[in-house]
Length: 187
Ligand code: AMP
Image (cartoon, rainbow, N blue to C red):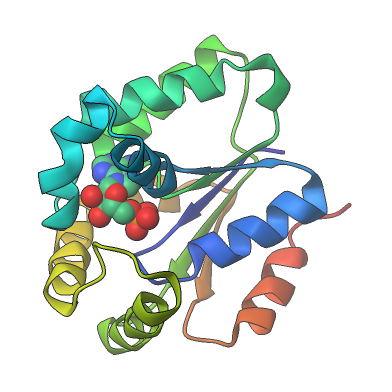
């Protein structure tokens, strides 16, 4: 099963992706994590993206799309993709459609975790203490939220017409969200 988890930073995509990964024996594709690892390993990509990441800006589509292409075409991961943080713009959503078409795959479910700004600020402040992420300062959080809302609204419109699209109230407790997601997965 291929699934997209969609929603602003701090909506709980990562937590639910981990749940789905264990339950469905799938792979969590977190572009944020992949990009942070590029920075940690000080790769050429890492050097190019560090400023944008720390500023809460999006990394260029070219870089992200290339990373995603390798994953979508990985035979081990075919039909077992849990997208967490991708696609984030309309051009990324269209790129993903092309990659899936070319690799003869489809998206089975799309979940939109809808959360308001106040909840996100509280959650990210908590996560900052727990995970010590360098891009989690309050300023960055607010920028990331605004960037997300600006560029992601068209993606929401693009996916919300899809029959597999489900909006979930992301301000609920984690277990409650998980239970809701579970009702759409019949395994
Ligand atoms: P996340 O861990 O998903 O909250 O992402 C952290 C940061 O990584 C974002 O603020 C962006 O700078 C970058 N990033 C993650 N996914 C993408 C993407 N699909 N497109 C562009 N930038 C991304």
